[in-house]
Image 1: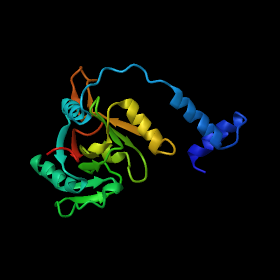
Image 2: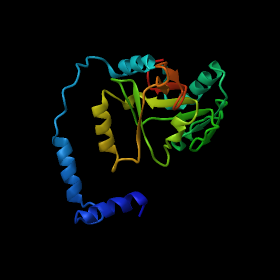
Image 3: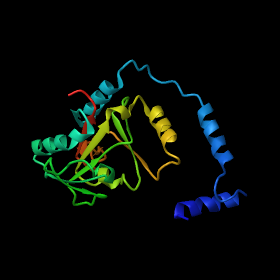
Image 4: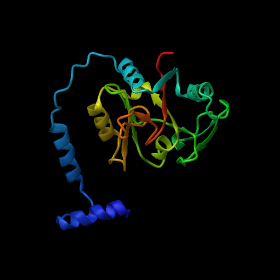
Length: 218
């Protein structure tokens, strides 16, 4: 039993419940969630891919398009060279099978360390309304890859672009048996205006966020 499961089991014991929820509890929660109506939303007559690109650029991300996931390593190499960045990176283990060697990039599939200059990730989905990337943690998707390196490159399938936050959460509920340990929302490079109200990039995360849309127009 993990520490998380142990804590939850102790809470349930105080409530007079068994250590793990039964199927009927899961069904009751799912029924409650499904029965809740969505709150009013702004009128959205835009196309999700176009909207996502516009919003991401407005947040100081940069955006590129490739025809398929297989073409992403070459696009990453072009970006790194054009910005005089090292051709060395860490990537999510789930992206390790891409042909990084042919693109001339030395890639290690592991969680990032402070010394790593570039982190390459995917995304659980992308939110068109705000230009935001949604990532979830797991053994093949460590959070540090998008947090520690100064440059974050995200490879996103255009089929994973959803309209809004509501659709993003619904997709997670539909596809994951249980919530991940952490969910992150990435809206452009890290920034803060805590000091003298002057916007500073990279204070709490990457200076650069580059998004490669796989399956979009070139």
